[in-house]
Structure formats: structure tokens, C-alpha cells
Image 1: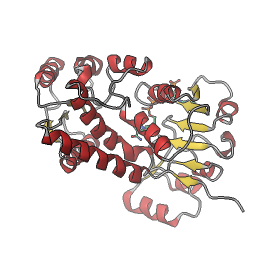
Image 2: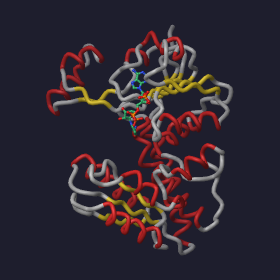
Image 3: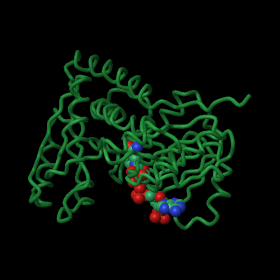
Length: 312
Ligand code: NDP
């Protein structure tokens, strides 16, 4: 009889991490150090407002101080730089998060580089990218850090495994590949110019898909028994697409009818059946991102004060 693949439940793992962070926050607060996160949200982008609200709410639940700064859409790069400079100088702020995307007239790269690397809880600053590359302690991007947490906490071996990462963005693919390499996997990074992608992905014991194309990794691109990590978050609005990816799934059809869209990852759900373990979408990698942000805020509070932290 075929064994069913193991579902790597991001919601459960995120709860574990949040409980650990809450304990660390309580310990630090008892020593007079209350970790603090500043979130800058420019303008009124509804999706960004939802993300930021949920980050601020989670801070409250875990005992982390949070402050929201909400400049108008018309804010200039110089005004934003002045805000970041003030936050860099404040002792009660350990983490600074600039919610992306920013309006087109604001220089995003310049701003992200203006955040003190020690308060860069998104792990996007080139100094932190360099620390990751050279295996030094630093703040690491939340989504790929979540992938490593899922693998480790699920007891899945990484050292010596063939890991294939599809996608090479600075926020997911590249750091995920480096983190897997730091965990001693044999890592291949693929992208849009990769020749014969299926022949590469079929070598993967651990396949990470961070592409941004609905269901792009099909069953014939997957080695039976692989671990599938699906980072993609794609919205399907066409009933024909929903039927193609989720044939006969009445629940999803109902959600589509009610909300006008459903979410699918970068891996065709049909491929999950072949795997030994996989992260569902939603409820997999995405569920960990805020937990890792909270983890990074506490880590930043400790690193800045020279209090010992584990290397991740
Ligand atoms: P980007 O668009 O920045 O990067 C996509 C990568 O996929 C690029 O490196 C691109 O290659 C590669 N790619 C595109 N098409 C192909 C193809 N046909 N074959 C092989 N590679 C291809 O996306 P992100 O990294 O920001 O995000 C990836 C996905 O993850 C998205 O669905 C996004 O929504 C999701 N995401 C989820 C998060 C979460 O919390 N779960 C957080 C962040 C992102 P090239 O470099 O050559 O163009």
C-alpha cells in the first residue's frame, strides 16, 4: 500500500516558534529589555495594510513593543531616510521593517540600505546578505529562514541531500540556496534561463519552488519520494484553472465562487502525491514568515546588546 505523503504543517510550526519567541521576550523583559519593532507603511495599499496589521497584532500577542509609522503616499525619499535615521538611533527599537512595495517615486534600494544592518529584521541589507554568505551570525530573510525551520523541526535530513532551488530572487531563492548550502546540502539553483529544468528538478531530494507561476512544477518534474517546499503564492480566478489544479474539489470551487479567487503555489498539487513530504499552500511556508520576523526582532535585540544567540 502506498504511504501518504507527510504534510509539513506551517501553522503548527509557526505556533511553536511564536511560543518560543514569547518565552524569550518574557525573559528579556524581566531583565529590562523589551524588544521593539517599528513598521513603516506608506500610503494605503490594502494588501500591505493587512500584512502590517497582522505583524503588529502578532507583536502584541508575543509581548514585543511595536510602533507603526504611516507616511502618506506623497512621502519623499529624503523624508523616509530621515525617519529611518531616527529609528536607527532609538534604543527602544530593535527592528525596522519597511513594508514593500513602496511608491514608485521612492528609492527602495537606498532606503533598505539606510536601515542599520543590526535592525534589518527583513534580512535584506547587503551586510546581512554578506553575513549569510560567509556563515556569520546576522539577520536572515524570513521566508527562506522559515524553510530551514520547517525542514529541521520536521526531522528531515538536509546534510548531503540534493537540494534544487527554482528561483534566484534576493529575498527567497538566493538566500534559500545559501541556507541549504550552510546546512551542507548539495545545492543547485535554477532560473528562467536554466536548460531542461525537469531533468534538474528530478534530481532533487529537496525541491524548493520560488518562481511565482501557478502550479509550474508538474508531477513529471519531481522525483518520487522527494520533499517539496512550495514558496509560491499565486491567485487563481479562472474556474477552469481551479478545476485543472484541483479536479473535483468542491470546497475550493465554493471558495472561488464566494471570494473570487483561490491560492495555489508554484507546484502543481498533483505532484504532492508523489512526494514523501510537502508544504501545502496556504498553510506551509507562508505561515512561518511572520513567526520568523518575530524571531528576528528578538534576535536583533539580543545581538545588539551582545547577548548570546544561536547562529540562525
Ligand atoms: P521573483 O519574481 O523575484 O523571482 C522569481 C524567480 O523565478 C526568478 O529567479 C526567475 O528567474 C524564476 N523563474 C521565473 N520563471 C521561471 C521559469 N519558467 N523557469 C525557471 N525559473 C523561473 O519572485 P520571488 O522570489 O519574490 O517570489 C517567488 C514566489 O514566492 C512568488 O509566488 C511569491 O508570491 C512567493 N513568495 C512567498 C512568500 C511567502 O511568505 N510564502 C514570500 C515571498 C515570496 P530569473 O531570475 O531568470 O528571472
